[in-house]
Length: 227
Ligand SMILES: Cc1cc2nc3c(=O)[nH]c(=O)nc-3n(C[C@H](O)[C@H](O)[C@H](O)COP(=O)(O)OP(=O)(O)OC[C@H]3O[C@@H](n4cnc5c(N)ncnc54)[C@H](O)[C@@H]3O)c2cc1C
Image (tube, protein in one colour):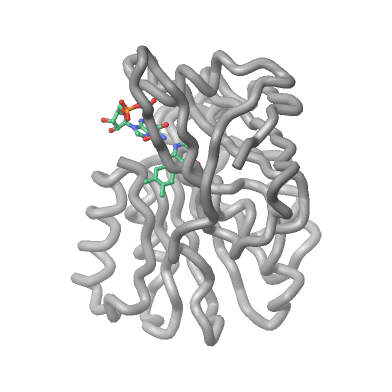
């Protein structure tokens, strides 16, 4: 199937929110799933996965950062409105588990993408469930969708948004440091919550190991690794 780029905007240094028209596909997927994009790069077919950052039924959006030495992300960043790219999907099992429990979402960097789709869909569907997002990045300007997530938290008593920075500016009044510690603190004594983790493998593996060490059943840990 073809996706035609409608627009993009820079939402952090080297990170873009892309919106695509998909004339052959009505965006029906489970929030958290990804699409598989293929482009010809230096004469070679390259395929990479990108989580859908928009909720089902809306124009398909992705959030990607540029990996300068990479293959597909530079091709995405070279696209201009009107350009087309091949894709397949949706794929993936990184979706809300049933029955739905109180949930902790842990993201770093563009790992926020599936959670945005999930939150925009599930917060209203499950008002009796508590959702908490711990979002870790280095710098304040890397807090993707920060205003939107803050507004979502302000408007939903069942959603708490906890950003944390490893390189905070002086004026930063929020949490500092990596996502591991606040995740464990939030879990506390509870073992009846599901924890969803998305980002690069080093963070995902470390958070999983710490949660298991703390005694959380591995079936309650759901994760997606980007590398
Ligand atoms: C299920 C799934 C969903 C994904 N969703 C997204 C998404 O929503 N947004 C997104 O930006 N990426 C996402 N990725 C990563 C994406 O598929 C590509 O790996 C990434 O864009 C790099 O591709 P590349 O061809 O440019 O570079 P490659 O040559 O494939 O990769 C170069 C290096 O970049 C590192 N890398 C991979 N992804 C990232 C990243 N996001 N940030 C920093 N370094 C990275 C890897 O360690 C790799 O060694 C997802 C991956 C998977 C498996």
